[in-house]
Structures are given as structure tokens and as C-alpha cells.
Image 1 (cartoon, rainbow, N blue to C red):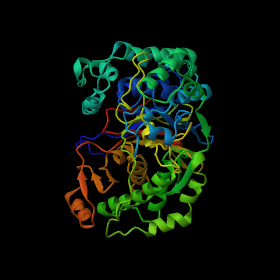
Image 2 (tube, one colour; image 1 turned 120 degrees about the horizontal axis):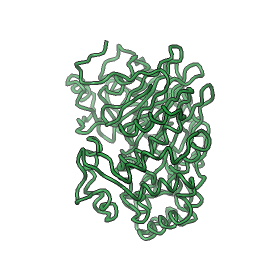
Image 3 (cartoon, one colour; image 1 turned 90 degrees about the vertical axis):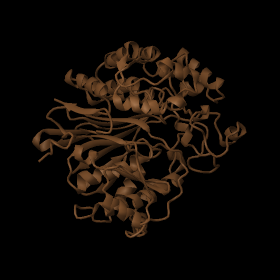
Length: 529
């Protein structure tokens, strides 16, 4: 029985349709579309457009996205909406520009050509039913007339204020009166409303061609970027459908997008965990320790081997093979922590995730990101577009699978997920949190599939994450468990901010029931009818 004194909330239950996002206004916009007969894609586009306005440090039209779409009774397909590096971008060119070890967040070279709008328009063309101007109506109103800033958004915004203040154009938009808005204050972005109208009227061409594209390219060039109008034009139809990848876990099939995303790392963690008994009898200390060790192994291989799919052929088959998984699992010692694997990726946290199941039974798992908080912090004053910083994950090492190169996609941390049972989709899900996402997928699914927790309970459970030479833990991890983990050699760091966020919708077709959860660490909610 649910503990109503816990200050937690139960999972949301409905029978026909449901949407779960990390922001209440985004959830409301999506539910409105579903109630009007819209598809899962229609609802997702309405929701993400709103979130690009009301959660500007986490996502935006100047970012990238990935999706997994499952028509009722059909096969899951993956959408890659990640952008490419400019045609002139090479390791040599960036080193000539003075970069050495990595690409800084605020460098113009961290800006790849944004892929989100190309992906949105492809999704809409293939699976949308309502016109874009109708789907963007709420977002346009909020951008033009303002919206009330929610508590978690306000907290995150304040933490990024000093950084965003270094770009005069971004500061003018995001630091009105010279400071970050507090919870309940109103904020508006009128130029973003214009961009959404333009996209609604002209599709992807409204963003990647014409005056808007020329202005964006010119601004990036003024900062020292290598971007050209031709780079933007080429991105108009750059998003593409592809086959997903998957692995079995606890009697289910877990589906992820293929590289250049890190979904492969999530599957590798799950494959390693499957070699152990993850049932309720396992102690909290053992569970956290095992998850940490599997994460370090998987992320070490991710950082070394994953990049643009053209640069890492056969990596999926190799890493998920029984031989490799067996060898990796055998390296884990339950009595002590391994030496940390090399971590040389920049830290990145800021993303939004949402999922939808519509009245027809179609399911969508959708993630949209600008990478760091406020992305690159570079805002074009003529278009109002805030550019992401996804190119910061490129390596400046010749020959590395993730080395920057002309028209190349970088390794991505953003990963939507889907779970299947007996050939049918039973749960779109996702976990936000940059580096944490692959580890978060594995931890959440273990809670649901190994421990039998309902969605909200699995999300609300205390989190841990092996990052660098630390084991990050949330305050809810018990003192007894902390002592045992330290005994095994883990260097603990108790986090002052929550680790990640998540959403999920579980489909119980036999009983005609949908159950949804939205992470209590964020402002959002799951709603249905």
C-alpha cells in the first residue's frame, strides 16, 4: 500500500492516453493536444516547444534531439536529430585557433549545426496530424507574453547566472534587471516566438534557410566560428530514421538509439548486471557497488570507442557480445572498488526528456538538449536563438572515433529508451542528467524489473553515480550503506543537488491501464485521461 505520509506521490493512472514531462506547462500543453485527438508526436512537439521557452537552460530550438517511436503493433524505429560539425571543422583548424586539449563550452567551436528542428519536422511529416501553428500555439504565447518561472528552473537558472552573464546578448534575454528570475517571476522571449512562427509556416526551411540561417551563420562567424550558410542549408533534412539497438534484461528487451548516442553504454551496463542476481535479497550496499563498477567499465569503453557511426563500425556487436560482457563482468570484485577508469569527457547535465502514449496506442520516447546549462551561452541577438554546446564533446585527437571532422556528428549523452515484452512495447522511458543518463537507465530499469517497484517509486529511490574518482550519492542513502561503501574503497560525495531526472509511462494492454511517473527532482508531472 502506498505511504501517503511519505511526502512522495504515487504513479499517475489513466486508461486512454498519457504524457510525462519535467515541466507542468509542457505536460499541460501535451495533454491538451492529446485531448483534442492528437497523436503522440503531436503532443510531444507541443510539449517540447513549450519547454524550449519555459526551461531555456535545459533545452531549445538551437539544440539536438533523439527519439524512439513505436506505432501500435509496429516495430520501434530510432530518429537521429543530432547536428554535424561545420564543413571546415578539423582537428588541425581548431588547434590553429588556439585550442589544445578540449573544446570549451563557450567556444563557438562547441556549436554544431543544431539538429532538433530538422528532427521535429521529420517527426511531424511522418506521424503528426495537427498543423504546427496549432501545436506551437501555447509555446508562442508563453514566449511572447511571458510565463511564471517554476522553482526547480529558478534554482538551476541562478546557478548559471554568472556564466550566462558573460555573453552580452544572452544576458540581456536571460538576466533581466541583471539577475536570474526567481520562482514565480515572469519571463518572455519575443524573438523565440518569431522563430516558432517561422518554423510553423515554413517547416525546417524556416530555420535552416533564408534570413534566419544567414543571421545565425554570421553571428557565429563573428565569434570566430567556422559555420557557413551552406552548413545550415545542408541541415534542413539532416535528421534521419534508423534501426535501434537492443539487449535482453530481466525477461524484457531494452531498446536504445544506436551510436552516436550513448545508449550502447546503457545496454552494456544492463548486460553486465544481468550476470548477477539483482533481486530484492541484494543489499543496498551491494547494489550500489555493483552498479558503480558496471558503470565504470561501460563508460570507459564508451569514451574510447563511441562516436559518429561511420567512425565506429561493429562497436555495438562487439561490446554486447557474450564474450566481452563475460570478461567485463568477471573483472568486478564485490569486496572492493576498482581503480577508476579514465574520464576525459567534459561534464554535461542539461537536457529535457518526455514520453507520450496516445489514444491509438502509439508510443514516443523523446529527448531534446542544448548540452550544458544554457548550452554554449552564445545567443544570436537578431534571431533570439541560443546555441547548444554539443561540439564540446568532440576530441581533438587525430584518429579517435570522436575526433572532430568536417560534417561529423559528436558522441551524444542524450538517450531515449523503450522497453518491450513479447514483441510489444510496454514502456517508453528516459533519464536526464548528462553523463548519468546511461547509468540512470540501468538503475531505473533494475528498480522496476528486478525489484518490482512502480514507476514513481523507482524514480524517487536514492541515486548513486560513479563519476571520475568519486561515487556520488544522494542524501537518502543510509549511513550504514555509506560506511560499507567506504570500506570497499569508494570515495563518497554526498550531492547537494539531485542526480538527474526521469519520466516513464508503463502500458498494461491486458487491463487497459497506463501508469506514469515524472521525477520529483524536477517540476514536472505525468497526466492522462
